[in-house]
Amino acid sequence: MKTLFLLLLLTTTAHAEVLLKDIGIVGLMSHDIFAWDHKREVNTENGRLDLSTIFDYEGGARWKKGGNPKNGENSPVWTVTTGLVKFYKNELKTKSPEEARKNTVARFHGMIKESFTRITGLQFPETGINQSVNNVEQAALRGLHDILPGRVNVYGRPVMRDFALTNFVFAKFRLNEKEMNQVIPFFNGDYAEEYKAIKIPFSKKTVNLKAVDGAFIEKWSPYKQEDMLRELGEVGEGRRTLADVSFMHHIFDLASKAICPLGNEWMPQEVNCF
Image (cartoon, rainbow, N blue to C red; front, side):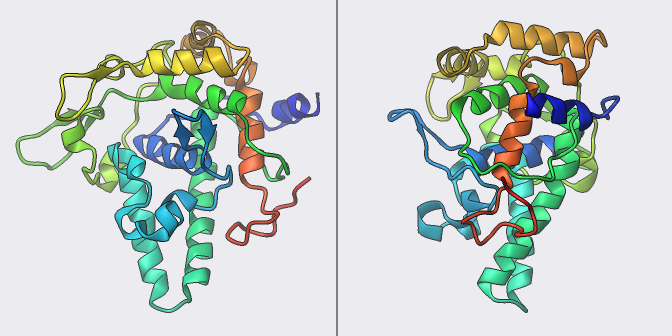
């Protein structure tokens, strides 16, 4: 009940235009909270926004390469990841590795606040919840994959005007500022077609992200994907607000847990956590 009350207080009155950079920022946010081990069916991330997906993956040996290889499977996420790695390297010129990481994490939090609001219609929480993230929250986050654009525009590139975000050839394509700031389509109640047949490199296999997410949602949450997408479709049509979406309070709880600094030295420590 308390969460629902806060949700109403912290909801924006109208949705802002969602930008491509928001997909990269919130995408990296999700990687920093969840890393799903399909075989063991457990989350191997720590559920906190401390950039462990970059700095702690494989004991920290891969931070120069963006950490978890998953961060290099999508062009907007890769652009955000490499931007933060570059920022960290610059911080190392004058600061210790510990201080440089703390500053990089703080920068990431600042980036998340705006992108989170544009995608969810909610103000980013200011108070943390001292609990572990759970699979219902992961399912809710997967429900928002409706917003993923299939194709994006590029500007000032020889011979190329756009590309599919699911094309592995462009997975580590660095986008420029104009490209990252392009407006993408809002929720419409379905996945872009490109995500329904993602080609696996060097094989004849394809993956249907909508089907994968649907199975996860069905198994780990009380929701059904078709109901979630129907609600988001109504949001896109202007017949429902994001605050009125049945699973949105889980997204707010997820973010509140992810910013809790208790027991985590890398997080901004001024956040109160209960």
